[in-house]
Image (cartoon, rainbow over all chains, first blue to last red; front, side, top):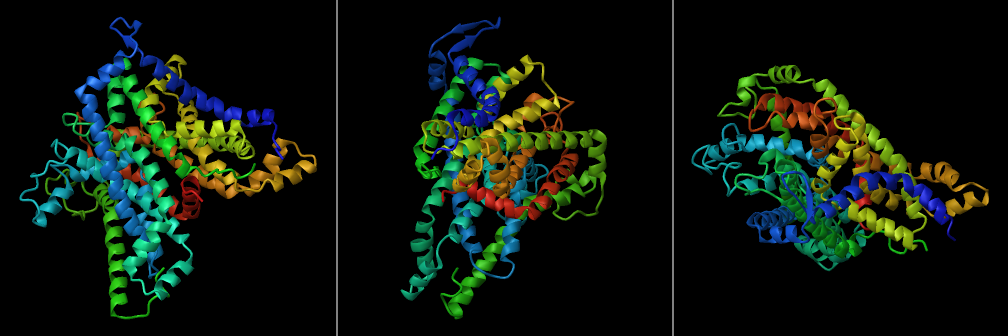
Length: 294
Length: 284
């Protein structure tokens, strides 16, 4: 029985839809239109077809920035999965103080990405940073300025990844922890009767049982990591020499700083297409509304 | 886990010990950056920019807080952040719950499928790409640097997230409840307000907390859409560290003032926080 008529559905949905149309869909349409135009000095627009897209694909910066984004996503999300899974398993054990420690571990979840970026910028600073002092004292580096975390092209991207991992490992941990809570006790009992070791329980029971949770956590994190802006903006603004520039930062800079609307829009459209493809392909995994009520 | 599976022997003691050790190390590592910035904010002004920094302050001082207080109207910015976050969340929760109710009650129909896919795609949009077009729209409407602008824009950009979370809450409520109300002659709106909303209250609260946090922590839109009148704290903090100046001392105190209350409050509402995160992201 369908209780709501089509008219009612529209009334209920319309107010929220107006907001989304004005500040999400309409800007998106503007972006798509702009990607086919070139703005010249006198602010006149001329239609250039797919030229902006060709320009993007032949631009070395675009390739560099795309590769950066890929590295950032793959490295950050893999580290987060590794640490998140390890911590989720650790906190599934019962020991005194486990709840308090777990709660404390969740605290980065509440911190603004911008603030997280600034905290790490402060800690990794080559002049005033504590990280190099600690590394120096423990004998891992020879002097406090032998690694220029934010100013050296080889380290800038890694530095932003460190901040991202710190900020979002708790999210991964929390999701996987909830997944582990859902594993029925009978599985563990059966395994221990069979004489399984703890490592076997982890790899043969826990990980396979929470596979759907792992996949949806990965999809969410991959898309969020690909879109990161605040952390990079706070720490390096993409520098030095594009070494830590991600697509989102690149798009923002080209639009806001250099006013290259056509090129930036075409890059944004390409980026959005990729993200939506990832979303739609993995949708079956994160789709929580399967034929529930018909 | 593992509690009743193995008796106490040497091996299981070792295992347990290493588990506790890992938990302790992880907690210290995760807390370190925040504790360090908290301690640094109480260092004398000169010690924050010392080239040989220590973890523990040599002496406690409020220099950085006084500096920050004198260099910007932090109270005004905190109020702006609060206004933008609270009012946009109210809009999101009110309009979002209505829309989610409609979607959840027609799941299976083409229309609600279309809405859901649309919502999902909008949720995944990289916000930097729409931020600049939004900035142009706001300028054309003459709404630049106004508090109401931030409220409306935050409500709009967080709406897909709100819908995504709330639809999963609403669709877990059996339709029998609605049917009973209809039999008694209630209109759809009455059913929604009197029957469904009270049942979904916990889910709505967790969604609200998340939305509040998203708006409170936003940087990009506040950076683009405000200059002085409606400026929020994240933008103000970011201005301490630019290529032209490096005021690390006041930056640490502003960062603490901005995020410590949120962390403390979140410990008290964690129940909602955790259940919300599960519902919003985990497939049942």
